[in-house]
Length: 130
Image (tube, rainbow, N blue to C red; front, top):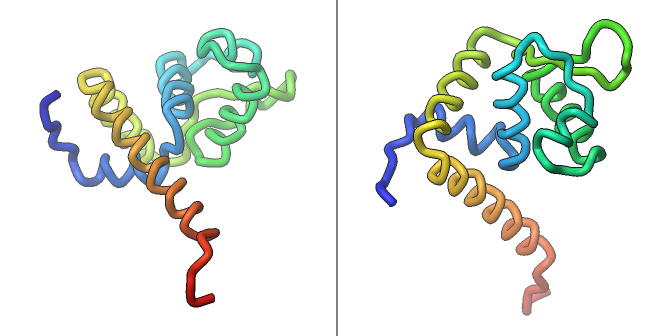
């Protein structure tokens, strides 16, 4: 696997804003169909995840400013709607990078998860001097 030079702003964006591969996949699916109104059941079917997982992904995308609830019913309806032009540009750049370097982006996301898990574990490690 070649060493892909990630632009620093995209690397930082992935490490701070993309918590998991399913989150990224959901984001890119919404981005690919920006006028579609997504419900958790539809997203679950497209991503092969449980409906509750898809519901959480949609809520997380909305909290991150990458999607928004639809104006009318049904209640669990979301659409792709980045909160700023700068965020839209970052997502577009990440989508392009992911289309060419899927494995490398995935490894970067997982490295962030591994680091967070280790930090969490370290917080509970008993020290000899305590």
